[in-house]
Length: 397
Image (cartoon, rainbow, N blue to C red):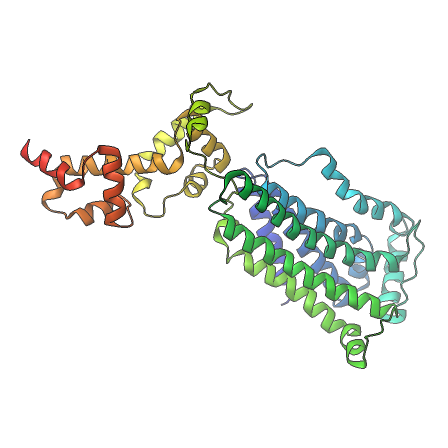
């Protein structure tokens, strides 16, 4: 029954990768991170719970490089989520070097005949627990310990990187993006789970290899030497990670970004917006315009929770691209654009005589405004008069 959990996680990973990678590049790294995590759980299961030589031979050593991908993929996801371009720098690929070195280091074992590998795996796992293998330049014990330390350091680094970029964003724009809180909670939770898993794995391996500390006690040795405890924490952590993804629907649906909506807040912004902007390579502005025009026929802006994230998800166009379209092509930010659409809709309702059967509050609610005060403020800003004055002018004409 337990094997269904990582299989479900792998299925979720492919959903993220196939359907949501087009919305945001960071979703690719999140999907790959989840995929690697759940494959690692399957490897643990195949090694220690199947008691089958074939699966032990398949799972033993071959998947070690995956352990060195977890940390970099977590960092890649964090970086591309926070960056303006959603792209990695060329030097970021250096993070994959430990995984590549592990592949090379393990070649003397992985190139053995499969029957020999299965025999060695079964003997080590079920009989001797003596992790001595013929590797090129790093021992098996070193790999098992360093992979946990590797993930632990990357998890801490991802949190530090998020804090650093958040502070830089605040200094640059004097405010944080609207999605800051949800992205912060998600990345901190994801990194925190990895810290628990990596710490538990590190202490277990140190105990197995008889590397002792001055603070050790009999209880410590009993806990961290027990396989059931070790696999319970690691497997439970990865399973909890899969469940937590569904508690963050914006993350799951891939329609969340860390960009700041830039309006014309000062004279510099107004001057910049008046200059012609070159379209990004590969961007078809006509397609975006047509897609939005067709989309507006359904009046999505009348929904109270209508947002840039929602239109991004519905149209399968990234938030960053849509934000650039509003700011650079229409010279208006999304919030102002939405406000104008709602006021135009209200005016049509009033001109159609809806004010005779509906109250102002009802009209405002039907247009997507959350309160009458917000509606009055927006209406006067755009039309120059209050809704009541506008209704009287239409009634008398």
